[in-house]
Image (tube, helix red, strand yellow):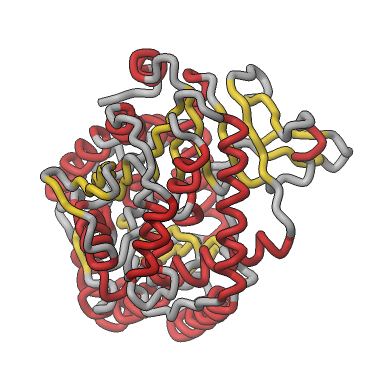
Length: 505
């Protein structure tokens, strides 16, 4: 198992005389003003930040990201850069500012109204708007210019994150000929039949083919991308090992299932802070002896309404658990400016009210709904309290909640009920795998989880904990960067070739 402490040694051996640059939409440090007007620096809770922050520190690299903090501009130099972490600076954070129109079109628009539903089989119709697409192009160009300022013609490894930057790999290769570009796509990649509805599918795939290394969570997503690329560009040839040849260069397409910081959750779960929080949750919400949990962003891909209906069906079918069992649903509001998310919030709130009215008594209600973010100790306390954790994603690139729950159970108890359509289901086979659309199946698996023998819980949990421990976030980081470092720097084909190829198809 790769640990945090191994990262520095790995970087020194791998990134020799190579500038390391990370590009992401979200920044790893945010500067805000306190109530007294003082500037404070916070690090958001993020698995990606936990993984890459030590790499940047060891490599003394540059992290390029969209500025979101109200005090961000007050602390940067004339080049928009600030050294981080604040208490012991080790690398540079280069902030990128957008106009409100660019941010709305690129982020709320194309990224989250077009690409997000396109890539998730949740049957929410993507919204394709040319102005959003133009903003997406502009922002990708803006970030490419920023990378060029940081890298120029020097030898560099540029690690691009996620669906916000599909065009960026090719734009970077055009500007930085000596850079190796790795791109990790953190969400599913759709089948060619689904991809073809996007008016700009060629530009998106062509941009990603600028990568030297293109990573996805699962082999299936790799196969989908390769099939889509070959359908769009017949001159793209496949070679053994999921390699794509095009314009005398190579893009390696590889699966890298992401993990979590296992030791962080495993260690925190036994802390006094978590023990206190467990008692506080029981007191505040008057929780009974048996508890189920769901912890999600409030997103239509998470299958929360069907999950709540399954709890309702469970209480109908197994009335002996009324008064003895409560389900705690944490649903952190997300993308609140978008209509589908506003409608989802109304649906979830109304369902909770309806189910609670149906069953609740003076001293008990079946569902507790928490509509705000929780601290890491609070989340871990819920993981510890739960008899089971219910993950019913309609589709998910990986789903880290499933892994966090497993890592938080050193007692080897607790049962994971996991959607078959979450990436985590590929290797967490000892969970109870459920169809998130089948309410009756979920309801009966809830009963199975509550009735499961402790010895069987222990057997299943130990096997899952072993896998999550082994496939941790630091192993993911090492695997991706080692594969990227092995890529040679290949020249990009001429723009005339690219344009004529696209036009001819």
